[in-house]
Image (cartoon, rainbow, N blue to C red; front, side, top):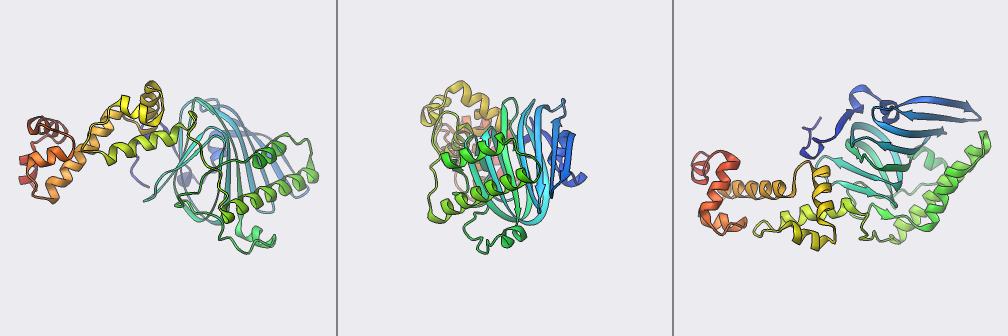
Length: 328
């Protein structure tokens, strides 16, 4: 398993792959189970040490549906390794989820957003945000099930690497999700109803992806995750400058206090710590890979005074830039 990421230090990490667990079994306990009419229905209560709420699980004809309505005490990170040909549909009604895969950009899924992704291998982390409501409907559809339903062409579905994977939910999708949650049907009638609604969701997702009818993700105040990642990118792209928190706040249209608090929560370090680390890492690379004078390297990472740069570099690496270069 990968070395624990810095931005996971304030989270509890649960290794599902190691213990071969489903995430619901790792954090909740079963309180109700009904098996019949070709459908298995189970209700799980969240373990109080993790928070409160319920997870409803429905399984029929290889299809698995999770309806989560929980509130975690703190952020949880699940590590998992799964090999299975399937389409995964996620509908985030409330909350935040970050999917981190090796060598890929993080997938950010926030409230009122959804995606449909085809996958054969999953090896990575899924982080759920705590201290706020988390409501998600998650559907797993094996390729074999889809082919039996006539879905031969799976090309419209996205991969986790696709830039346009996540989209805002349309009113049609929200209406279907509400009907799934509010149905009073039981037994075979419920199974037929839920399956029909899932196929309807699938059809809408295929149509949106295939025709490019992607609902634009807005820049509203509640899309905090994406703004935090934008802040990281702005700093990484401007190491020769010195973005202040006030400037970042203005650029992202985000309250300074929220920006500082949420950045530390998500990435495990302050904005200044991140910016400084990125600058020093860049300086180390330039000292290793080039023969640029030290004063020019200082300018490359936003230091107008080489003496101030050398002092900061020594605090970070434990040696001056000159000694760092000659030690290589």
